[in-house]
Every structure is written in C-alpha cells, then in structure tokens.
Length: 262
Image (tube, rainbow, N blue to C red):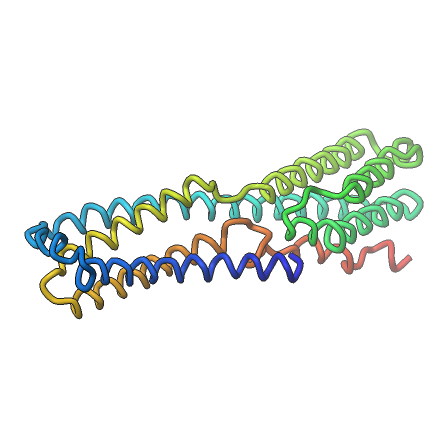
C-alpha cells in the first residue's frame, strides 16, 4: 500500500468514527436542547426493550459481516500455506535428483518465490491484480520440470509427482490472488451504519429524563460501535493493514538444499 493509499485508508476509518460520535452529539442536541426537544420528550414512555431488539440486530449483522471479512483472510492464509507446501514438496523432490536435473528446478523455484515476495506481494497490498512477472515465474518453473533432462532422467512416477506439485502451486496462487481482490460489500457497510444509527436513536429515546445519563449512554454505545466498526474495517482486505504473512513462501528463497553442497 502506498503512502497516499494508506492515508486515505486511515482517513476513512477516522471519518467513520468521528461520524459515529457526531451522530450521538446530534441526537443529544435534538432530544434535549433543540426546538424539537418537546416532541422527543413526548416519547418518554418508549420501552427499554426496543434498545435490546435494535442492539441485537446490529450486533448480529456486524458479527456476520465481520465473520465474512475474517473468513476471506483465513482463506487467503490457507492458500498461502498450500502454495508454500507445494513449493517445499517440489524443493525436496528436486534436491534428491542429480545436480543437472534438480538444480534448474530449485533455481526456478527460488526465482518464483523471489518474484512472489518482491514483486507480486506489494501489488496485492495495493489491491492491484497480479503482475505478469508472477505468471512468467510459474511458467519458468513448469518449463524446468518439463525439460528433457528431467523427463528422461527421472522415473515416470516421480515426474508425475513433480508435475502435480507444480499444478498445486498454480492452483494455490490463483486462490491467493482471488482472495486478494475480495473486499467488504459497500451495501453491507451501509446497513451496518444504518443499524448503528438506529441503535443510538433508541438509546437516546429511553434516556429522555436526564441529559447527562443520555450523554453517558450515547458515548458508551458510540465507543462500542466504533470498536466493532474499526475491527471490521481494518480487516476488509487480507493484504492490507494487517496483512497475511508471506513468510512461508519467503523461507524457500534462503532454504539450503543438498545440491548446494555438491
């Protein structure tokens, strides 16, 4: 994520929190100090159970929404682990072969990991699609496995496993790229904001007898809404802010193989 994008990202979060407290202040003014206060004061018999009903709706919707966002992060992390496992399996199979067969595969594998971490990962953090370099690096890995010395120099069963692992790498990479493009639905954010506003309104209406008590209740609920809003917003994309770790793939760049010692 660039500095400008990060500033916009954090700015929107701060704006959302300020809007929550501003809404609470507006409701306090309308109910207790504005010329509309007598109308709101006429609603003093509103049942406190209304707060529980609206609050539960807000809590449930926020929970489901946050669960969707965090599931995206979990699926992205799973894809990374699967990609790294396929790469490690390919690495271990390659190092068991002779140098003229195994070293080209290991070199292509390390190049793939390097391009993934140094080129592709920053693009994912910026919310951009995958680079052509990442796909080219995978193609080079596939060419290394399909090279004549490998095809002719290893048993058919071993070569089949090598190809299978290369395909697993591509499948996991595609899944990782897919998850990087998923974000929170704007309509769901709008629904969360509306339910939060209705929750604040019901809190204000059941504390019409004392504006100080009303202020305290509004501030407490505003803080609770801000916490849930912040937690969901910071996790809206798995590769932004609290990014998933690329470490499982990065480790392959520096992992020593048996062929390095020959």
